[in-house]
Each structure stands twice: as C-alpha cells, then as structure tokens.
Length: 141
Length: 433
Image (cartoon, rainbow over all chains, first blue to last red):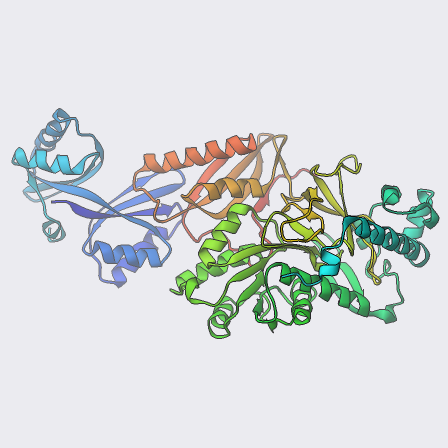
C-alpha cells in the first residue's frame, strides 16, 4: 500500500529540472506522477517513478539532494465528492495531510497523499473500504 | 619527536639571552645596510645603541606589507644581491607582489625550522611526504620541500592541484603525510569519496595544513574524512615561509621558532604592546635572517601567546590557532564578523557542510549578509516546512554567535566553488570606498 516517492531538492536555476529529467530518461526510468512545491529560492520535486531506488542512487551520484518518502495513492471514482469523502474520513481521525497532488484518468481519479502518520492512515482507509493503489498499479496507469 | 632539543627545549632565561643578542645584531645590520630602516629609525630618533635588548623592542618602528611594496622589489634587502640565492613572492591582492630574498644561510635556517615543523607533527625519515602546496614563487612548496629533505623524509614533490594525480600518488606511492591547505584537504577527501576510495585503505596518517585560517571543527571534519591527524602549521613569506610556527601532538597552540622569529602581540588600533595572554595582532621581528631582516612586521593575524612549558617538552612560546586576520574581518552593520566564526557555527550543525559562501551587499544603505549553505543529502526533507525550520535554526545559531541577523540561502550540494588555494568565501559587493 505504501509507495516510495522520490523527492528532489532543486535550486531555482534554469535548466535544473530538465537536467534531472534527462538523467532519469537516459536510464529508462518512467515518471508516473510529479508535482513541484516552490519557494522563492528553491523547489522540491515530488515524483513517483518506476524504479525509485535506482533513481535515487542515480541522482545522488549526480550531486542532487534526494530522498525517498513514503506516500499512499488513493483511487476514487472520477466524480464530485470523492475526494471530500476520503479527506473527511482522515479529518475525523485527526490525521493531517502534509501534502497532496491528484489527477484523474477516465472513470478514475487518484490522489497521492502524505500524512503525518502513514501507517495509521492506511489502516483507517482500508477499514473504510477505500481503494489504495499498490506501487505497480500506479506505475501502470 | 623533537628535531633540535637544544634549541626547542632551551630554558627561558637562555632563550631571552639569545634573543637579546640577536635582536641587537639585527637592528645594527638594518640600520647600516637598509636605508629605508635607517630613515625610519632616524625619524623616531633611535640609534642602534638605544636598543639594548628585548625591553627596547617597543621603541622600534613597525614594518607593514605596504613598506615591502614601497621597496619593490629588492630595496629592503640587507645584503648585496650577489649573496641572494633565491627569491619568492606572494601574489599581491592589490598592486605589486611582495618580494622576499634568501641568502644561503637563510635557506639553511628555513630548512631547519621546517624540519622542526615536521618532527613536531611526528613526520620523520621513514615518512613519505606528498607536498601538495604549490611550487614556484609561493613559499609553501619549496619551503616544505627543503625542510623535508633536511629531516630525511622521502619527498613526493607533486605541487598543488591536479587532484586525480594526487589521488593516484596517495594510492601508489604510499604517502604517509600530506602538506596542503585545509580547504584542499577537505576537497581531496570529497574527491576520494567520489572515487569510492576509503581513506582508511591508504597509508596516509598525517596532514600538515596551513596557509589559511581554519577552525577546530574543520580539523575534526578533515581528521574524520581523511582518517589522519591534522596539524596546523603557520608561516608567511615575509618572515620566512612555512616553518614559523607549528603544532605538536598536544595541539594546544603552535610553537613559534622564536630563536629566529621574535613574536609580540599588539593592539591593532593603538599599536600598543599587549600583556601576555591578551589577544591581538601578531608581530614578528626576524633576528637571524640575513637577506631580508624585518623589524616588527605586522602580520594582521589575530592570536595570543602562551609562554608556559608544553607537555611535549618544548619551551618555545605557543601561539593560539589564528582566529582570523584583522584584514579579513568584515564589518556588517557595525558588527565585526570573521568568516571563521560562521564556519564553526555551520560545522557544529550536522546538517550543513563546511562549504559556504558569504555575500555582503548593501540595500537601502543597510548591510545585508547572505550565507549560502550547502544542504547535506541525508538531511534533505521533502517538506518545505522542515527546510524552513533548518534555515531558521542556522539563522538563530548565527545570530547567537555573531550578534547579527543573516539571510540564509540553502543551495544544492557541490554547487559552491571549491577552492584549491586560499579559500575565497566572501563576496563583498558593497562599495565603501
């Protein structure tokens, strides 16, 4: 249920994101989802990739600051209210969302979520019969 | 290991006697052989006979880098040029370089004091010393070279730079000691890591590091990363080059070869001589040099002296590791800031590398200090609030130490310029002149 997300520290310099993605492309690593959190000086890339460990080593060797972070991917019907329902459950259990990014595809929608207590989050959402994706499923969307 | 027990462990009373005698000789020589000094002394109304010993030292005029520049290149030499067998020069940060000259006897003295330096750091005839200071006009390379030969060590004269070569020689030639700047030692440690070489697999055990100020925290970092014992050595070309002072295994200050170089500590503002133990600017009078004897040369290095006998057995006075130079001191919003202070704050925080850059600028007539810090990979968090917390912790720690608030900028690892010579860690964009 828990998926490894690749996080990368990037200074706000032109070409840096392109360098990073080129490195991954060269090693045939696919990006399934990606978001950028930015401040005035630096950005943090959060991305789900096909081979997280390999990607991490590769970027580290190329002097990037990288870490792997545990996240979950919530699979919902692509219709109004789905996300609200999931978030409501989390808030009822006092789970805070650290960050989230989401996308939809056909009948389905997906939210990648990092919370302050991921293990508890998983058990709560499973108890409520919500669908969490395995890493492989996310890579194959 | 002590190279010259007779001189290095001499009773203090005998040392003073020697210094009295040698100082008088030197004053006499410069008065008669160096017109510039004669004029300076006449201006102060002093004759050589007025200098009866150490207690009269304070009557003598100071010498500054400016004086050497004014006498460029050879006008301060005290012997005919035919007796000078070598010149060195330090690159001038402003204007012309500072030129120094050595007689055959000076080269012998220099070799002697460097041999002492090596023994002080437990480097002897069984050692292979890789000299990674630059050879050439800079005194570092050739100074250590001659002293190492005198001490009987095997010299590997690789000179500065060319890191790939340095690493190859460290591996293949079995260097047990290295002489370089502390920042280069760190650079080398990183390069070894990149190559996947474990320093513990090398023969390297000792580093004699100098030519730039460095902190004790940086020493620990170097010792850990290179798996060596790192000794601070001190010297400046105007006095002789490396070999002026060096640490012994006690590492409680650097022993000054004061039978050749007579130290004083002055207040850099009032120029008054300070009492023993007070921190101030280090001033040297050379008392055995023939080619270029200097009276009361102002080093601009800040330190204090300790005359207590060292546990190593040496009676030579010790100077504290230099805490900065009076001329690299930054004044930011009226606050005195030494780059070495910032370095020690950063090194105490495990998250940050000792690689940093200071940018001083002026916005709306207000000085701004920006500290760029490399974020270590293992610390990196993907949450902005964690990175912002790191920034504010650095900011707070700096503020506590400096009494000054600074803007912190986190940068990617390996992006700040590595210096292979003297660190250039400050960019001052203010136009104050």
